[in-house]
Length: 136
Image (cartoon, rainbow, N blue to C red; front, side, top):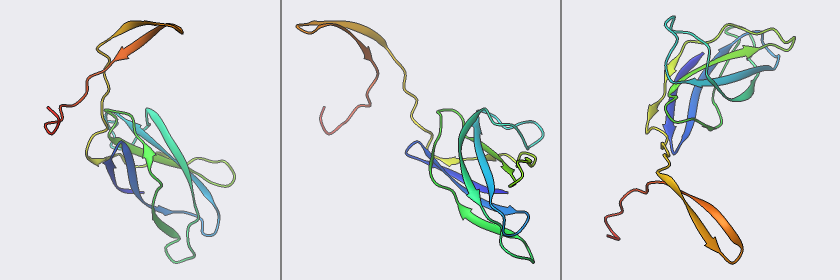
């Protein structure tokens, strides 16, 4: 079902081929995980989103598409999915694929600082910023 997945700018794009009953809309739900299940198929840690798919007519009864871009959590580069038919029955989880490309950014907080001003006191979270050689 999952052919490939790529990450760019914190979003994952998934290439899918889906085979099932022709002409009926199925719901595909996509998940990410920090690791693949040992079986090579498997449950996902974080739901990325859903997309509808309608398999084509016989022979083959399949449809191929590239999903919309889903935001992907940092460190969860393994993608899996399952389908639900119009009657609400779920299929087994798909094989797990490793999304290739740039990893989503990991934001860490270095601490916080109290800022006092005329409107009150605020907590300001401090996070690292990448060095920009053109401005330093």
